[in-house]
Image (tube, rainbow, N blue to C red; front, side, top):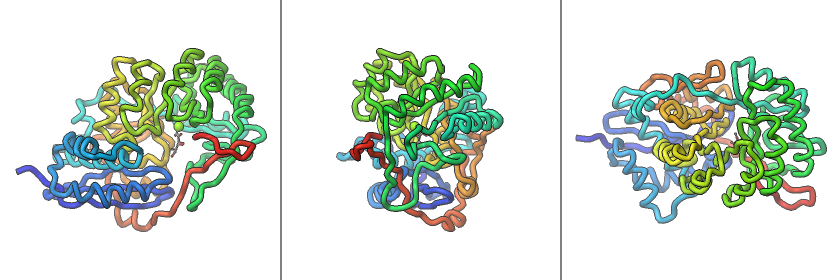
Length: 404
Ligand code: GCO
Ligand code: MG
């Protein structure tokens, strides 16, 4: 007789930052873990899981992974959206974890096996001044990275999202009301191309450089930035325009050959459809959890492949070590995978989530432990209680709200 899910529980923990984790237990005693972290909206996903999905999971056959995905997605009248899709993603990850543990195989073997030996990763370098930024890039290269995302301060602004005044940064700030930042696109556009050109002159031609514009530009500003950055030879320019209107990318694409990466805030394959079939992007950035799990990331890769678009999933500190594991199993087994973002996690997170995956010389590998290869230390997790934390918001100089 097939196995049954007997318990579905949600864990909240904050080992350096908040994480939401789904734990599924089967009648045979197998435990599957899924990441359900949605930065700044953790409790919404926890409630969606606890109140709505967990009761529906108990009694189901854990081996029917695709049917469970279809049940939770197609079966729901109110569907899509980051909260729903992160919850479905967590269930999907936990079920793949159970399948792997039951089979005694790492998930990547169940996905068809490795198509590469290791997964190329990029990490973050930030610096308020360009000299600091170059030092941060050098430090990443010393750690073995062959690809680095570079974010710079902007003269005249006090803060810029994603740029620490010191080394490193954490996207979410503690508290129940978001910090407010001032944003000035003109100042950014005046400064960023020259700063990135200096970084390129410093590194020489081989290092892959990436840059994230965080959805803040109009189409023509984005086109102008892409063109201005062509001499820098970026690996990609990320999230140039707000997420809602994909049509505007046609204008950006018409003006620049700088490769474009988009999609960390997308929740479903349908949001990518036009971007892929019109070849308006080069990299689809869906996070394995935020877009519905391993099952839907594989579908996205299959849609993207004939259009020569690659999947290059989101991987900041708010994608937990469980989701990082899942992303790596997909990456190892997916031909049209580009690069995996690896921002790193706070130290205690590596203790709470003991993972088989590793980062060596700027490359990641999921490891060969059965399932996803992550064990959660629940006793330790309980010592780091959830604390409210939020991403900042930004206003223009005249006080009006500006886009993410
Ligand atoms: C990235 C990102 C992150 C996100 C953060 C939001 O490319 O890594 O843009 O810094 O903003 O993950 O939660
Ligand atoms: Mg980004």
